[in-house]
Length: 59
Image (cartoon, rainbow, N blue to C red; front, side, top):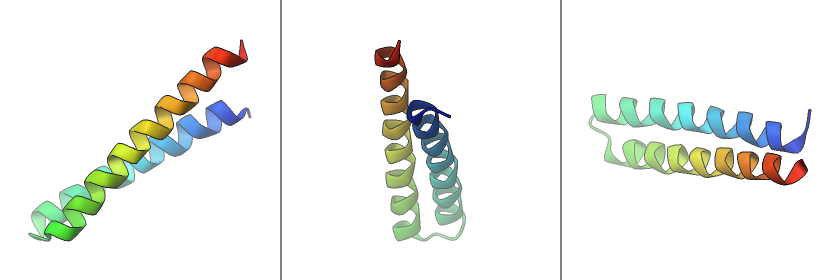
């Protein structure tokens, strides 16, 4: 498995994990958890995009 594919998978995983944390923070009225979830979600998007860019340059 190429590093670009691994980056995309890790990014997707972080996006999902961040979304779940964000939702739990919303339900439990925990602003810290909600903020942590948003940050992880955004980091996942960036990581996923890096993987996509790497794929373009691998060709």
